[in-house]
Length: 124
Length: 339
Length: 88
Image (cartoon, rainbow over all chains, first blue to last red):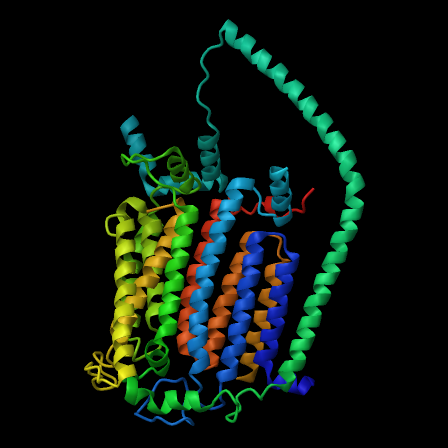
């Protein structure tokens, strides 16, 4: 199994990064850390996708000298998907940070537990 | 004599000597002195003294009350903490175990995936073959990825631009601080503005100097990347992000007043609206033609020329404008809640 | 070539761990910026220059700037660990 994992090193690292991001999301109480963890999970998925499209010895999908054959270029589909993903991830990061600022303005803390406590106190 | 002295002090050698004599801390001391210098108090009068004494007494009383409350709270909290600590430790262990378990199962899957870089991977199927072999001929774009995301999968990209626009609108709702009806700033806006530059000087020489040189270069580079999107790596998204980075640099160097000369809320609304509208109309036209088998009449040009590949370059420009405006307005809203 | 690939991927993991380990918020942000730049280089290795250019501009540029502005808004940029402590 270790040999197989070493051969698929990009995907192995992507999975490990996904796990790290997930544990940051679970363990950190700071909202900004949580947002960074979510971004790390995102990039892990992108790394996984992009490594699926790579083919040894073939070049980036930009036509050179009019050669259009599948043995010359790598798979362009994952690149397009990841490009979409990066832009969507930056927009949701923006929204989450805006929500964080609003929460801070109201409760003066970034700690998710404290915010939950204070919000419960407000309800009562 | 005094004039000569001040002349002498303004000369560089003198300043260096002074700096040498007083050590590194001279400047720091000067700043601290400037910051801690208090305004002179008006002379004390009788009732002022009395009021002060009363205030002191009431403060003392409040403090003792608060301390008592804290004592009670601490006693209560101590009873609670033990259980809470155990629970939080259990939670940490559980979370780590969950992550490790997830990594383990996913690694098992990765070991069974097709080999990295294998030409016979199932991902390289008929779809990617079509994009590579027919892409240049059908879209006219040398960069196959650009041809893919702006021609074959243009609907996807329209959705993505819409996501960006909606995100900008959501941030606008969350962080916008409005002005009064007569244009005068409300209390909140004044607070935000004074808060905005609390820790920094109003005009930073180094930042402004480097921004003067860098901003045009960054903007030019972004425009180059957008216009060359169908010929080389890049395109609307990356070019738009670079342009917005240049604008953000200008904004943070010269402030909102100067940036407001060319970028206002109205600019954002109209540029985003027209770009998205143009995108939607252009793609609707080409989808309509494609679905009904009518030749669209848009020349593809010679591959490799700057004016080639039909609609891809205008679409790249539209996407780039949406992205640049959105990122810039994100920054402006985060800084002080509006332009 | 293999060595560079392994080293870059190892740095990714180290950066991701460092984000969660550091005490200071500002440090973890800067580490996240480094993470994004390493990711851009890895995309050049994976023959996807489109992604590399986008990641360098968006991930290391815009996202980090937004995070920095947020930190400034919540007054945590001076390195005070006031927001890091456990709730009492």
